[in-house]
Picture 1 (cartoon, one colour):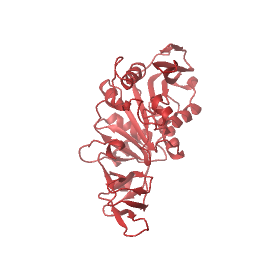
Picture 2 (cartoon, rainbow, N blue to C red):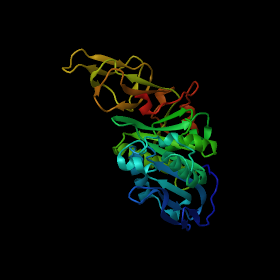
Picture 3 (tube, rainbow, N blue to C red):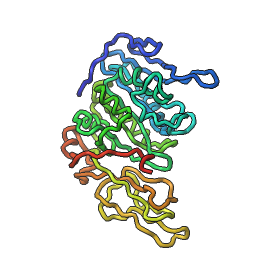
Picture 4 (cartoon, one colour):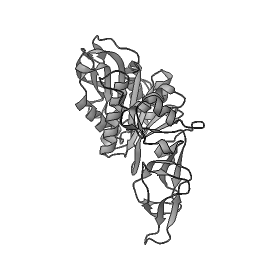
Length: 359
C-alpha cells in the first residue's frame, strides 16, 4: 500500500478546537454573519487517529443542491472509528451551506463556489468561503475526495474524475472502484485546480442526481472512500480490489441531444455499454407520433442521462464516455496493476463541461 505524507500523533489543531489522538470533534469555522445576526459556519467533523498517517479531506455539496455526498459522509461516520484510524480525516458534508439550505447550486449572489478558488478574505461571499475552505482544510491535507452529482433532472453513473497525466491518481481511482474513471484537464478556479497547484491530489466523484439520495450512489461512494483509505494505510483492510470490476477508463465523452422536441422513450440507461449506430431512445410527438431515433455516435458507456422525459429539440439526453477495451469493463480484478493495464485509454484528454454549462 502507498502512504502519503505522515501526520504526527500529537493533538490536531483546527479552528478553535484541539483534538487529541483517537478522538473526534465537530468544528464550526465562522464564514459570515447573516441578517439574523447568527453566524454561518463551515461545519466539519474531524476524526484524529490514534496512529500516524496522512491528513485527508472528504467534501460534499460544494454545489448546494448536490446532496448525495452528504449522505455518503453520514454513512462513513457510522463505519469509521478514530481509535483505529491512522492519520486525520476531515469531513465537510455541506461546504456551500448557503446553497444547501436553499436547495440551490449557487450561493445567494449566484456565484459558483467551484469557480471561486483560491478566494480571498475581502472578496465576494463565494470568494471568502473558498478562502476559508482552502486555509483550514485543503492546505492541511495531502489528499482530497470531492463529492458531486448531476444537475437537476439528470442522473450520473458513479464515476471518478481525475486530472490527466497523473499515475498516482489513476492508482487511487482504481482503488476507489467506481464503474468509470474519466481523465480531463482541470478547470481554472475549481477546488481541484487549486489543490493541484498546492500539490494536494484530488479525486472527484460524480454520482446520482441533484436534490436526491439513491442507494447505489451512496454505497459506491462510501465503499470507494473506504477502499482509498485502506489503500493509503489509514484503515486496516486490504486494498479493496478483490471482487471489484475493472473500472472503464476514458478521456473523451460526448453529449447526445434530442433531434426534436417531444416525449423521450429510452432504450438504455446510465451504466449500459453502447455501440456506434445503436438506438438509445426515441422522441415522439404528444400522441406518440413521428418517433425520431437518438443514435449513439460512438462506442462507449452511458455515464449520464436525463431523467425528465419531456425534452426540447437540442436538449442533452445522454452522456457517453468513449472507452477503449470496452470488453474488459466490469471484469473481476485482483490487483491495481492488472486493472490499469486492462483499461488504458487512448488519445489526449479533453475538457469536460459542467452539466449546467452543457445545458
